[in-house]
Each structure stands twice: as structure tokens, then as C-alpha cells.
Amino acid sequence: MQINKHGSFYIRNGWPTKIIDAVDNNTLVFSPNSELEAVDNIGVGRVMIKAMRYWATAMGITSEIKTQQGVAHELTPLGMLVKQFDPYCQNVGTLWALHRNLVNDVDNATAWYWAFNEMGPKVFTKDSFVGDFNSYLQKNGGKYAKAAVEKEFDCFKNTYVSDKAFDINKIIDEDTIPFFAPLKLIQYEGDGHFEMRRSPAKEIPPEIVLFCIVSDNQDHLEESQQIGVDKLLEASGQIGKYMNLSYASLLEILQQLENMSKLTLVNNFGNRYIQLKNVPAMNVISDYYQKIVR
Image (cartoon, rainbow, N blue to C red; front, side):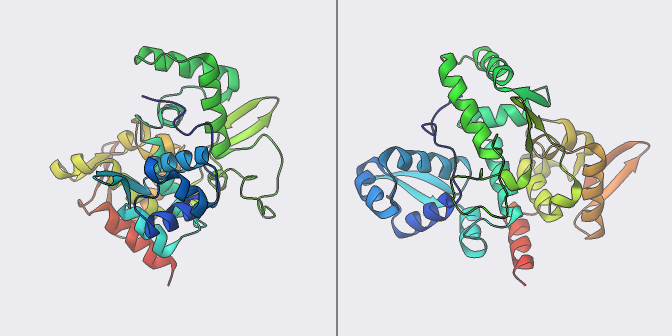
């Protein structure tokens, strides 16, 4: 478990595009040996270059490979799909997929994992977040100064919500609007209070939910084609947690997928579960992108 690997720089709109372009042109662009070249080519400072390297891997856009020349970055299968179909990350499905990767990276994005999978209260303040998260870190062997945990909260908050008013339809400056703000997962309630907002089913593409289900349960699906609805709703690392879904919204999405012949929703005397084939997750999201460009 680690914090502050981003150097307190939250993900900016436009950064995924810059990351994809940079890695596409030079796989060693984020290697420590190439920092000065990266500064010139990408147009940000050295500390931001390190932050971009962090966000590239934490969101699953790139993967790191050690080579004789240095640390190389390659676009992941998801990164290649984003490059091809949504290079500016304007589609909400892309944002959900990147959010899913981020909040399931317990080792490198611990605050994000904890907030969506382990944190109890749906309404929180900076002080309550910092106190509870620090306790979680300590229980798991992490010892950090309070100031460091406060910086982690600020970065976490700034990826989802602003405590300043803005019109999402009139934003030009990429630093003004939080990258994941279109997902509306967290709301600022005023007076220092934030709330985890329930996500209505209509705001999430069902194909993206299927992509997440398959991605989150790959090992399970190799053994069984059945997954309990309660697990999807309540278990850490599952869509119910990190998409902030209610039971009703989850069922609505699963019914949509059943109508699309993507899975079967079974009710066995009140024990609800889904049946689906172990289709590669990348096939699922590739079909989604093919659909939206038609």
C-alpha cells in the first residue's frame, strides 16, 4: 500500500491523450533516463512527468516493462482501444473503465480502493476521510504523517469533484474540471461535506458493466459461469461498490444485459445470480466501442 506516488498532481483532462501519444511515439518516454526529452515533447515539468507515469499505469492505460534501455511503457489492450476509438476520453464508457482500473489497484491507488470499496460512511469531510483512511493504513502496516494523508485526500477529491461551482458544459481549461466529474460519483454538499452519490442505471452503459463484471471475476468464471447478485452488489472490488449502485439499479442493468442476450438472470427462490460465459473482457469492451462509432 502506497500514497502520494502521484506527487500530489491529480489526473488532468487531456493527460490520457498526451500519455497515449507520447508512448505511441517512444516507449521509453517515461523512463527516468528520458525525463528531459519527455519534458520537451510533452510540455510539462519533470514532476508532472512522474505523475503522468503514475496515472498511466494506475488507470490501466499503459503497462511498465523493464528493458536494457530503461523502463518502457506499452499501451495495454484497453489503452489501444481508447487510442483507436476515444483518444480524448469523451465517452462516459471510457471513464467508467478507467475508474474501474484505478479503484481496484489497492497497491498503487490505495486511497481510491479504500474510498470506494472499504470506507463506511457515504457522507464525509476531509477530517473524517483522513482519520479513517489513516487508521486503515496503520492496520495494514502503513505509517504516514497526517500531512501526507491530507495530500492524498486532496488528490483523491480532485479526481472526482470540485468544491467550487462550475458549468461542465462551458469548461475550456483542462485543469478546472476533475477528470472523473462526468461520472457524478461524489457530490460536494457544501460546508466541507462530500457525499458518495448513488449511480442511476441510465447513466452507465450496460456493456461497460458487463466488461467490469468479467474483468473483476476472471478467475471465478474459469471455474463457474454463475455469480451471485449479492456478491456483485456488496463484495469489495465489484461493481456495486465502486459504481455506487443500489440493488434496484444493479438489477435494472442486469435485466438490460439479459434483454441483450449477454447473460441470464436467475431467481432461485429469492437467491438471485447471473449466468454468463467466460468471454474475454477485451472482447466485451471492443464490441462496445464498435457499437458507439457506428
